[in-house]
Length: 307
Image (tube, rainbow, N blue to C red; front, side, top):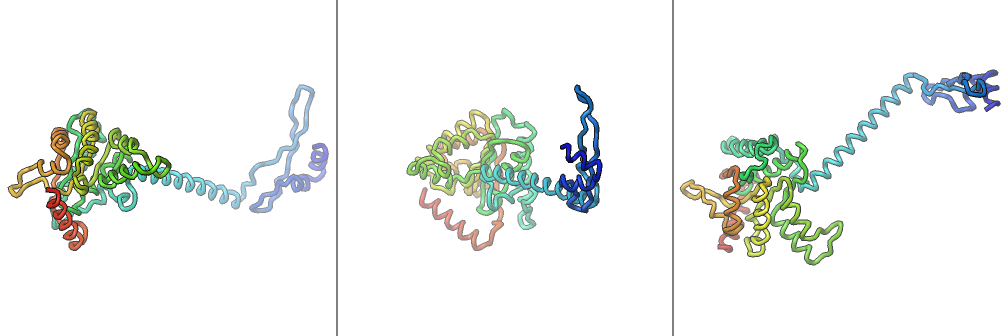
């Protein structure tokens, strides 16, 4: 230190170069100054070097550094949000399912009513209007490919974006397969146990069970569904259910009993009593006509086989 102090008195620039105090952007030497500190035993000289040059290159680098830090922060937030969506079951094409992305079709005017009812349900949830209400179930039923899954996923997405936790979108058939797989594989990072699978759909703040009638209504499937619906009805937990079976008969009369083969009478009775709204989807498929016709033929084939 004494040698540097002496050098600073004789040649401040040489001292700065030896200390490495040179601006990397413009090459300016940041010359030190000798300052005196008052200490109990007297004054003590000390070298004080500026930390910043203030040149345009340094200011630009600082700005770029701030931008890089901001970009990193935004990336981390996006990754966290994406992970939250995946945990909720909103991945792949479901990520694009929002209310704004739902297409109101000119050839199906009633699609506007479907959108409005689903949004009204979401608004009632977010505002707290349905907190503690026994009528907190939304039932979406009707033709294949008409946007039921889209609106169910959009409602879950809206809840997550509003700050709700433990919201889940679960295709019923896939969930049953996951439960069956858990019987043969030990629980681990890639395989959950049956209790964990069922706990989230029983306890979730908002749960959407999609395509309940896409899976055959076997006794085991009905026995699995009943405690989920029973607990959610008793605890008044908001729930969305989608079906491909039409709920209106040829006389346009509501006929809930068309769902009984898929859920069973006890479960159906609880769903009917807890319903906030029933939305009928009688319109044409948003997919290609050929694909829709094939799915419709397959659905009727399964229905005939089950009844």
